[in-house]
Image 1 (tube, rainbow, N blue to C red):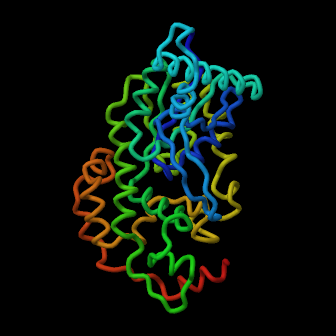
Image 2 (cartoon, one colour):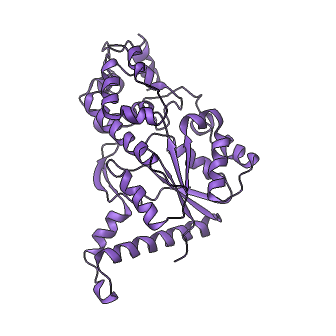
Length: 324
């Protein structure tokens, strides 16, 4: 089977992948979306409205589908059928997207589920060895902060941050935003993607959230060139201009209507407003090496600037009430 015209963007959650995907869709030759092809993952997760829904990858579904399929008369074993099933589905969905969008190239945004980043990259290389992989990175401390806010309504009941930001308990002073469990969860997930970035192949391209904040058109040009479409400065600038924070949210960068906004602030370094010394030390314990490897710090002296407890502005809680 000839090479399927699909390429991949891989990043930790809350790293700007949705922002990047929207910008990529501004290119007339590109259709960018999210397929969740790999990771062999299937779990039921809670949604912000209290309902639940499955999170399942295609490879996990393919294995379950194969349990009841009579593949032996086709001269296949279980593994062979699963592989053919997956590639045939990707071929179908990519060709469907190209027909409907008129684009030549499909870009698949992947934020691996916990514990699956290495398998995701392994499967990409197995099925699509000639595809480009765009590695998108963001400072893990900002990922942790953004992710913890994003999950306030899913896993924070009973925590101090829930009392402060959701219950908005009058007179309650928040001295620590995170807890040990949430730091370990997000730091481990972030570290996994940085680890796979470090084992990238010759078809890999590296971009960062921070670089996109400074000059998104230049980062887009790198991606467009890697996937073989027109990469002029004019096209990249038009793509970036269409998805600025202000245009997509109706708010100025750095502002937030409520803490659970999907696009909350859109800035670099917000973690500094929420990290205590305990949080920093635990983050270093879990993902400190990855922080250095990704170039976000040269050493861990940054821990010395962190406070023992938070001192949020006196009007912080009131300002949240005004936006409710």
